[in-house]
Image (tube, rainbow over all chains, first blue to last red; front, top):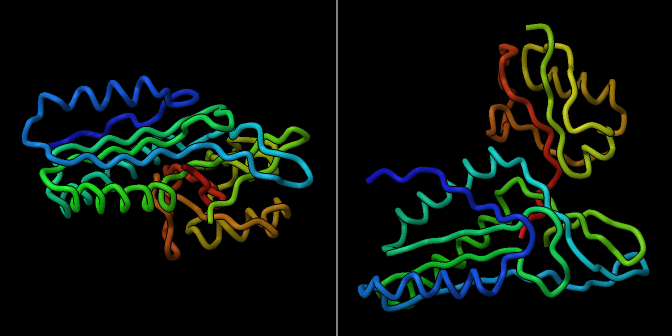
Length: 145
Length: 78
C-alpha cells in the first residue's frame, strides 16, 4: 500500500483536545499494545535580558512535507509500527503551549519508544522549519541545540 | 532562462528583506553562490544551505535555469 505525503502543519498551537482525540482514535486498533508520544512545548527562556513569550514558526512548506514523507517512510521501514502521526505548528505558539506532537504505536513498547525518539531527532534536524522567539522586549531567531 | 526565482527563509529573508527575488542565471551552484555573496554581502556572514528543487545541495551541482532555488538558514523547528 503506497503512502502519500500528508500535511503535518497546524496553524498555531496544538490543542490538548487534538492530542486526546488522536489517542481515542486508536482504541479500535486492537493489535496495538504500546503508544509513545512526544510533545514539544514552548519554553519561557531568558534571552537578551528579556523573556520568550512565544515562538513564531515559518517553514519551506513544500520541502518540509517532502522531507517529512521521506523520514516517515524510512522509519516505517526500520520499525514494525502500526501507526505514526506527526504534527508541527506554524505561526505563533505561546509559552506553555504545544508546538510539536509525534505519536507512534506498535505491538510492544520498545519499538514505539525508539521510533518516536528517532522521529523527533530527525524532525528537528532535517525539516526546513524556523522558529523566531518573540520576547517581552524584542525578538531573536531560535537556535536548535 | 535568464533569471532564477530565489526563495529565502527565516533570518535570511529578514536580512535580504525579501522572501523571493530574481537573480541572473548561473550554470552551477558554486558560481551561483559566489555571485549571490558578491551582490548580497550580508550573506557572507550568514550560515546557510542551498536547496535545489527542495533537495539540499551537498556538492557543486549543474543548473539549467528551471530549478527552484532556496536559501535556508540553520533549521530550528520543534
